[in-house]
Length: 66
Image 1 (cartoon, helix red, strand yellow):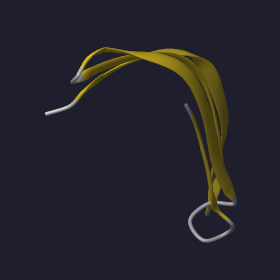
Image 2 (cartoon, rainbow, N blue to C red):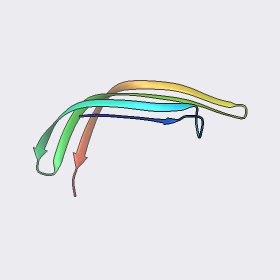
Image 3 (cartoon, rainbow, N blue to C red):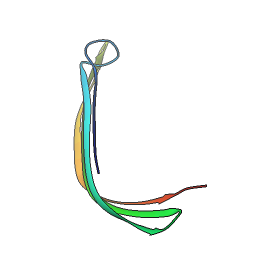
Image 4 (tube, rainbow, N blue to C red):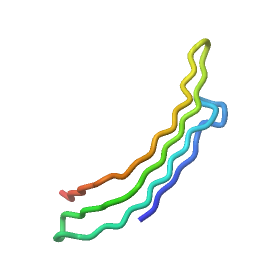
C-alpha cells in the first residue's frame, strides 16, 4: 500500500506533504496488520510564529472493520 498528499500552497501553510508506504496482511475478514514507513513535512509561518518540521519513522498499523 502507498499513499501521498500535498497541500498548503500559501493558503494555510507554505507547503505540507506526507508519504506512506506499507506491507500488510489480512489476519481475518475484519482485521489487517501493516508494517510501513511514513515521512511528513510541514512549513508554516503566521505572524511571528514559524513551524518548519520534518518527521519520519517506522510504523505498525492495526486496522479493524466494523
